[in-house]
Length: 434
Ligand SMILES: Cc1ncc(COP(=O)(O)O)c(C=O)c1O
Ligand SMILES: [Zn+2]
Image 1 (cartoon, helix red, strand yellow):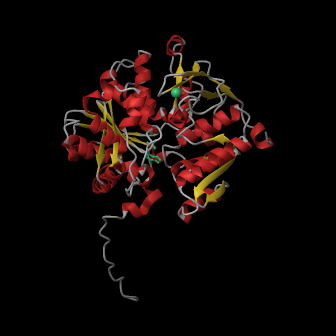
Image 2 (spheres, rainbow, N blue to C red; image 1 turned 90 degrees about the vertical axis):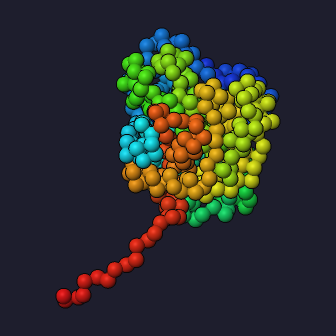
Image 3 (spheres, helix red, strand yellow; image 1 turned 120 degrees about the vertical axis):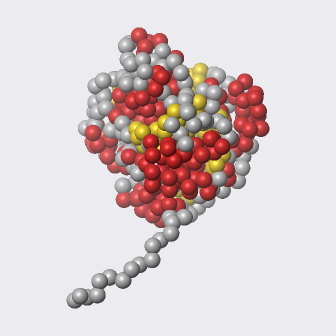
């Protein structure tokens, strides 16, 4: 361990975290298991963290009052820091009651959970915070991931703040502006002469060789636990800290879906809160994919009423890869790696998956900006685009209380925001000397 790391506060494990269970075959692994996926099912066998909910409830609280940001929910995370560090505290993002936008859409209650305010301006910081803490608990000061997008930016920002090192594998074709941000934050960037999938495979091999800690959400099951806190914060804010106001929870929560990590964890948060008796009702969690990258929405529609009763293997067979095409690059995913967890958790909430056209996403960017003062990148606005589609399809009604997760800031992809803009023509200045 290098000196910078040893100067940081020590990280403890969470005694209530029991281990992980495979979402395909239900095989259970203890906390000492050092693999990321199920040893029987391979890459499809994504693991899911399991906690002793009765013990957490008996211990009196889902909160750790001594910690800030997302660490407030440390009893429901696989790792807890011994002390907070203001520079890399992540969480406590605003909850907006977006009445003007709601009125415009014909919805009585519209709530936005605004994760554009996090340090690297996307929800991904919640996963990176857990990755940084877990790596430090294991005595590893070097993290790595394969990404060109928000996960990479998030890892670069948080490792810079924590004084740790990161290596990021990117396809060599990645936009220079995105690479520049990573390099500026001190990340080691390795351009791979190949596709994203090839960069991902190389990253896995190099991480194993050098014993770097993996911040690839698609296979490290502990990272999605950090993402869960976006929903824990929302539920806590709407129920006055779980003080019995469960009537104030939303009827539906809309979440953009790429690999399916965020939606798995949002649904899981509500399922866990009910398990612990802190809420009675679980909102319907509705996953929104761009129509050009919608394997989950397509598989869901084709499965009909059997969606809730399908085994992990049946779910795998029901979702077919697509060639992804959408301007919402963060959710441009042909085969979601967390698809089984996403499907199972959404089904358990009575929710569903639907697809929206790129034009609707572009419309949602404008509505959020104009009527709520929130600027979102295309993927970040896809939840709101889903409200338009879900109302059309009768999945939500005008009297429902609806919450939307806004997951990434518009300045990350300002070009997309300019898509439908009418730029005003310049006017002449005042005549000089006049
Ligand atoms: C801004 C934003 N929204 C939504 C998503 C989709 O999340 P997931 O891949 O976990 O489904 C991503 C993933 O990169 C993202 O960056
Ligand atoms: Zn398995």
